[in-house]
View 1 (cartoon, protein in one colour):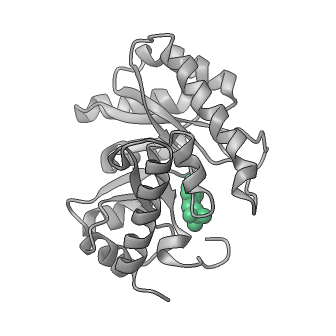
View 2 (view 1 turned 45 degrees about the vertical axis):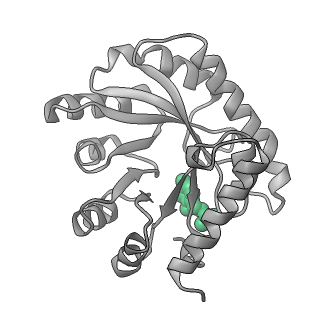
Amino acid sequence: MAEIAERIREVNARIGAAATRAGRDPGSVRLMGVTKTVEIDRVAEAFAAGLTLFGENYVQEGLAKAAALPGAEFHFIGHLQSNKARKAAESFAMVQSLDRPSLAAELSKAAVGLGRVLPVLIEVNLGDEESKSGCTPEEAAALAERAGEWQGLKVVGLMALPPWSENPEATRPHFKALAALAERIRGLNLPGVEMRELSMGMSGDFEVAIEEGATIVRVGTALFGERQRNG
Ligand SMILES: *Cc1c(COP(=O)(O)O)cnc(C)c1O
């Protein structure tokens, strides 16, 4: 297996090439290392190699890594239970998986208590698969319309985890749909909403996602290798 630093260089080069192909500034796309089940030592190795943004799916695991790596930016990207909202608001720079009003209320209350405004992305379930978290496009628009109610939150964009496919081109229509939804919500000029981030694209399809407007690509396997099963 290649060194993590080398993989980061490779993925960054592919990000740059995809952005350039799409006529975009490579600096407009951020690489997030997805570190669920990855040991702290290897996350530290990635941080030392220059990767500064990480995504975690589990609150406790993310807390431990964030505490061990001051200066690194951790976003929460997993399904968030309301009873973990306080811990998440405390320890993560952004929550990318807001998918229901009750969670927005809990996160906002926690953020207000901490004296901060927490940036959040609304997670949209484009594949309409029951097993995955995320709300429907209609629910996403409805959540954005209510953003002004949640003083502790600022909605800064959308996140999606489309149905997995071996062929990245099969995912392109989902990326297009997410970008179009963001555009539609942006056009509403809602209070508490600034549609500037599109978090989409993973190891198998991040180049296609960049061509369709991704500003954050969430890459696990291509940086850290295969995860343990159920990881
Ligand atoms: C695991 C995960 C990823 C990364 O997937 P890879 O295919 O390993 O790059 C991205 N986003 C979310 C929400 C994940 O859970």
